Amino acid sequence: MMAPRAEHAAAVPVWAIWIMLVGASAVGFELAEGHATARTAATVAVGLAALKIHLVFDHYMELKWTHRPLRPMLAAWLALVSATLLASIWLT
Image 1 (cartoon, rainbow, N blue to C red):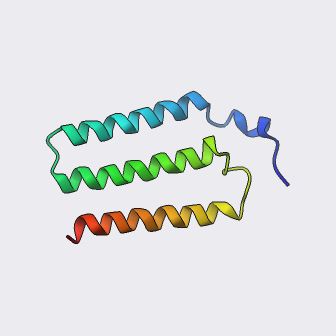
Image 2: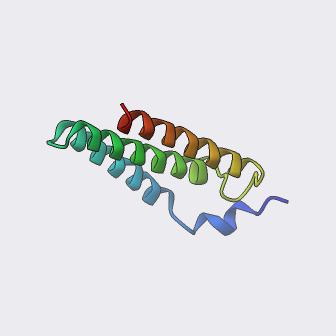
């Protein structure tokens, strides 16, 4: 049974999630343009991308409150893709 959307809407305002997404993008841009090493910048970029994907899954796609069987599959997919990218960065 799906929980009513109004009950959970006040948990984290949409504007706060938007600010987090924009902030993560700004940090990633600064790392890419800054003085970080390539591996460090790539590692942080993958972490930021995973965080942003998680925020979009939970708050914009509303998978936090519904579709319970789908959430573990998406979390596993995100972990697998992130681990594969990190392995390709650090093992090459």
